[in-house]
Length: 105
Image (tube, rainbow, N blue to C red; front, top):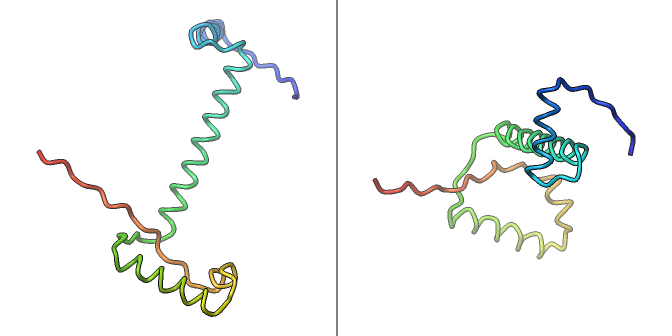
């Protein structure tokens, strides 16, 4: 690991020390690493959400949708073509959208 020094105002240092004690971190470095990991995860989630939004409109997963997928798989298997080659040449499908049930009010 490469050491890094961070300067904090007294109020922030007291907050970090309290978090270390209250959350059972071994030291301030563990707390900071945890914060950074959480921030990285948040960035990855945001990137995935944005990629999903940019991929086009969603479609509902219906029995017909799964029938199409099964037929496509059967066709690929019958042709003996590796699926990686087929998916590379196939048009991208819109990402399915999970149906959400509304609660009765």
